[in-house]
Image 1 (cartoon, rainbow, N blue to C red):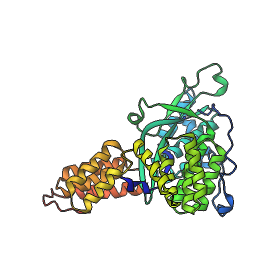
Image 2: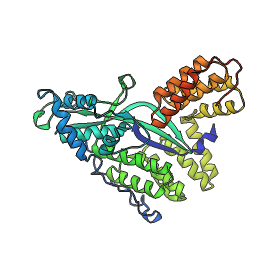
Image 3: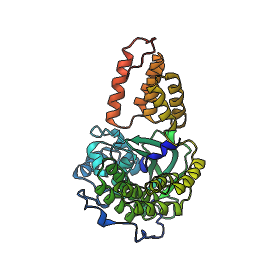
Image 4: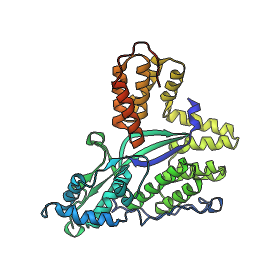
Length: 394
């Protein structure tokens, strides 16, 4: 179990609440940023461009919205235009977090990107835009040596501010979400400010650059994220991971302890701090903190998955199936778990279950690359007769 702790943890707001609330300003601690350690970013970083409309988006408003009924609620008109436009076929893709105009141009994005795009249109139309952080079951993913915890955001559209004086804006609001309704039904949500949404977007960009090995760019993105919202603790966690990867363990410890000073049970910061303490050869402190983490999180993310992979390598498909099934039981919508469960079932000769799990992997995939992979695997399985030899084919 403890070997799993060797992977840094990052928090994303990419999958998956209203901007009228603005918390009191709390500045970033003066010693948190170490600009001299990093080269200037080559990527353009601007908070104002997050919601900026492109000429093509203005054209969409002029043409596609004009086709909607003039007497229709403008919020519904926007939703209908997004859904019915022949020129706009939006596709969910978790690969990259995009600005509003980038998501519109690509016709795809993760939930954060699609929320930004919808908000940009709504703001241009003069509607009240309210952002919500939705509390869904934790969704973990893994890329190389990083674990990512994805959250979920959506938005609620109110009427024109001039028409709603004295009204309960949230009661009269129209919530727009890019996940199926059954996944978010009855989920709690917290209203958050626009500065927090921008910080979430920038933190995502920092994590994506970090995953690609671009540390200077990652640092620049997370620094700007925390300037947008100094209370956004996930940004400090990301900053700590960047510092550690850059070899600056004291700065990493400072950022991670700042998170834990505010949230003593934050398991992401705790996991990363254990790695920093080990880097600094402070083994006893790391052991003590590990014991606290094990108490808070006895079965860490991907624990059963890693056991399943080990069982697959040993040719023990029955135990592999059981381990992968346990991961599916606690994360039903992560495509990779279904994929490996399909492989285990195929190794056991159960082509019917393998086909079912590959179909679920395809249904829950979040990038074009994964969808193409699972489509090809499913087509191959559909062409096979039942394999009774138990031979594992990867």
